[in-house]
Length: 417
Image (cartoon, rainbow, N blue to C red):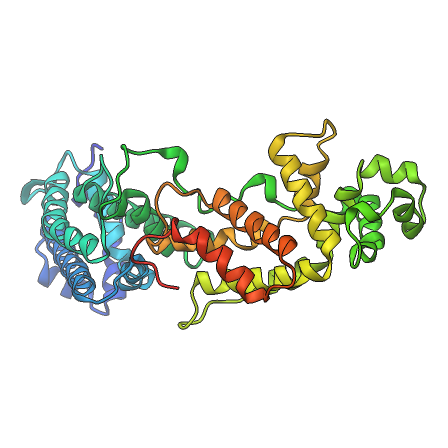
């Protein structure tokens, strides 16, 4: 705090600096009378780079505001990480000025490092706040109280500064796409669809986009080897029969184990049937995780997952009955041995569509008060019940009717299927 910007720059050897610039030491002093003069020139260059970055950001926001069908992803694409990376030198100078913000820049300048930064920050916010206001409106959204456009600009600037500094120190820790994810998530968290009413900030309803629902995280297979062996061996028993038609003795015979072992591991037939879904997870995950194309969105991908899920459920009716039974038991908190929770951790079907629901929120298509895990739960339950009740209906109709009904009240007016 006690050093001047000039003093901080003095740690750079003049000869090394001249060699890096491709000039002689004499040439350096020909252009700069002394270290104080050099420090002033560096400050001028910093302000020039800052102004150019501000002008570019303003241009990006203006382009976004003028576009048709703008969404938050467009904002991320405009302000891509490559541009931020290119401003690394500007970031170094920012932090040197920050370290000397209470002292004059040099012997020749009474302006402090803090004065330089304040001028730069004022130019940034005076320029971009009106453009953020236009961009938010162009996306069909509005600021969520108590936030305003200045809060949004300050937060976005802090994200850029923080990630840029971290990247400079340990670039291997900054994963690809982190900047885009943070910008999109922050934008959605601080805004809402225009006209949607919400009483202030309800942190409990905000999406923890990078934190999976712990109850639906699959456990390591090694934890329950006997459990998995029994479930795999018994799975064919439920292909053509309901859970009421299969006995524990049938399961024990198929697995080559005693009935007491089956009771100890599962407690009930429905739990065994539900775990039969483990053999289909690979196929369903392959569909769910296939990259989206320009012609496909998260809704299309969820429909594909659910369509295959219903096809498998109709083919293996007993497994579908068992899954629905265990989901209901988990919701009611039944089972002192936590059987249903263990079953659902073994077969985390909700994880197949929760990322796509969060993508809807990122794009500004999902109403703010809708939580991803609850919406995923409702979708799977309704589709499952419809498949059990009307198994002879076309699969596409089962999915479209129930899936569309749930989404009708969850999506904003700007969503596209």
